[in-house]
Image 1 (cartoon, rainbow, N blue to C red):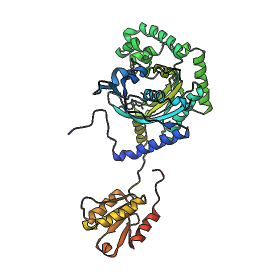
Image 2 (cartoon, protein in one colour):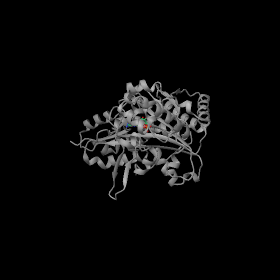
Image 3 (cartoon, protein in one colour):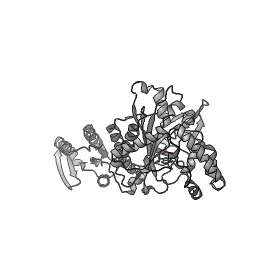
Image 4 (cartoon, helix red, strand yellow):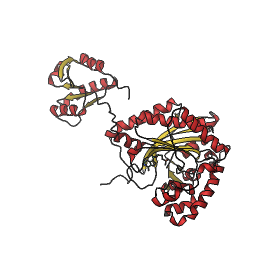
Length: 424
Ligand code: AMP
């Protein structure tokens, strides 16, 4: 038996209705905010991620699925979507048509991480990017969008963490101070944090290690190193969130994993998730376009939700979404009756009525059992009499009532009773 690759997961038919519910909600809320979908390839030149995410991040260092294709080019399965979206915006010159782009994406991502609950090697993200505004109004709008999605999905227990890491100049200063501070305790830090001290000191603040936490407790606070622009941006963002009655928890240690963030960063967490309690997050990335060599600076902000984690939350809340059962099942007792079965099935399906019939030469009794199992509303029975008289017998499975009609009348009865599910 050959199994799926570790850290990947089959999404089975019974799980699909909940996926559809989530996907439909994402699409709906995106349009409410005027965001349009963009779809980029699943793989990119490795350079796209090296330039953007930062060479010293976990993703680039340890987690990318990178390989040489047959032409010798270095290719990477996308570990995140912001960099590909920025690449696509530049390459397709989208900013020439609209100086404020509202984009969303949805699809699979790939990271070579240690698999555990809520952590996969192929997982899915929905994300949104608001490109072209440096104003705090854009920060607020992207958080409003994220929050609306969370609400409409019916996620009951969650919190929104908010922080600012300031502009580049402020962060640079803060980084220096952090290095000075942590160097004093280098011997007591975890190996990972000691490594980060050399490469990416801000990320030490992310550590979950008990010993690190003790040291982190008294480290310099980022707000003390903010310049005027950083303070103003952060305060105005908080004001706008308050204006919209958005509750958030100010979290000075929230830095997030990627190098390209500036100013606002935020994260959604839910206690229903366990150890991997973050189900989404994002931030401002004012310098990413320049990293790609774009001729001018393009301020932007975005976020992403992890779909599998959202599903874990919904499942733990017992949120269930039902898929519509097939509506009719045509049961027939002889293979010679197939032309009649096809004729009826064609007619019903042409009228958008989901229709099934047997393809395993089962007995009429077994077919009735199947129809019951599928939960259909009507079974159309074609037996000897029905064939002879050009009639159909319709059994209403809910009412357990059975009647024989002329073919036309019978079909009409079914068509008239069918109310399509508006959701699909
Ligand atoms: P990030 O792109 O790392 O900021 O992650 C954004 C969201 O994607 C997280 O909050 C998770 O919900 C989800 N996520 C990240 N990595 C994984 C993973 N390996 N497996 C499943 N979900 C993930």
